[in-house]
Image 1 (cartoon, rainbow, N blue to C red):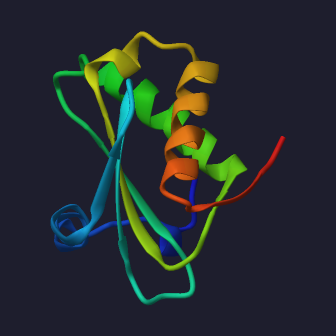
Image 2 (tube, one colour):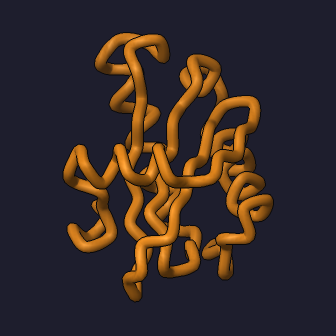
Length: 114
């Protein structure tokens, strides 16, 4: 589980990151990021019902949280990761590669853990 200070918890924070942020897309994910003027990054996940039922959506969110815990996102951003319906059928490694590629395109990645 990500520490509370690294999570977007309020709807207003989600809405601000989506409205004011830049957008990068890939086959399975969409990344939206906006500067937050904090010393840490904050991240939130949006997985709609189009991805699947509750079991599938929760599995996608668990996988994304595990990937984020290993990746070092640069501080100073609010990030919202939205899963596309194809994210439900992709293996873990494919989701990880997709996420890391998005971070690189957004120039928001520090280093990647094992």
